[in-house]
Length: 97
Image (cartoon, rainbow, N blue to C red):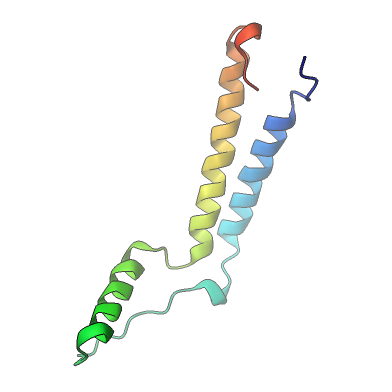
């Protein structure tokens, strides 16, 4: 019989959610992506391919990488809390957490 405390997933979910909110608020300058300069380039070959790849990747990344990490933590925390609440609604024999 498992003797783990039933509040562990709830506390973990709250901690993940809180950490995500804090990280999203804290946006250090070191993790801020620079703005691309809009001047004409005459590079070729590998340098051009690397620049185009970098610019394409920069378009899908958030302007500050802590936003993405914080959002992921918030989703994990909310998911864990939701799972625990739904787990309380099922029969005692079928509970996972």
